[in-house]
Image (cartoon, rainbow, N blue to C red):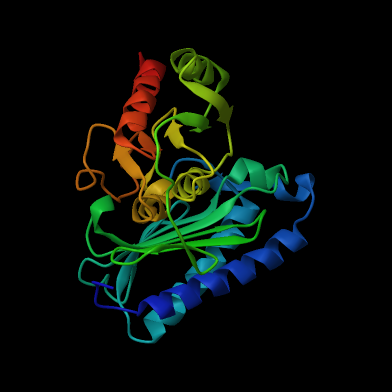
Length: 278
């Protein structure tokens, strides 16, 4: 890894320990009523679920352990915002979404994820480690900037070929779906709405979806880890209006995200994305 700080193996150990802690949280808060309890507004601007806070606490416990080992970095998290560990490090950032797909988690829909990215700079281009764990299927996606994208330890590659058989739409409301669907009519066969941007990006990388778009602006915490998995698997990822180096990792950044197997398919999806905002 191209950063001064914990090794890749140490980061992964911290991520996996957080996963196990979150498993216990979801087991304790099993029903919709338990998972629908709120407490305040997070730094990302959304209402904070109790399970969001508990899941974030589990991650921050691991970050505190890394700090105790002498490491320094800046954490950027949906709920707490920017938090310095050991003085903040020299450009080292950890971008965290404790539960990407909170609505799914709240409704006990078994598709939501933990998303953690490590970067040695301030943009998507600087992400050097991406970790996404999907709790429904119990699958772990990992990518490093100089290595393969992995699903449960095995390399994944985006399949070759053009064509949009299955497309994922994220951050959706009915009116946005309608506009995107009108543009995709006759150009895509099926639309899916998984409910987690991080997972949708990983699924493009794994060839489960041929492409994905967000239909409203997303945050860095939603996409930072998944975009690296998709790119290292061979997919094309675009942050509308900015290149990878212009898509910043701070919590105030907002951008449309699109990913596809090929540039030609990505162009079609970007048309649909632009139609949503027309």
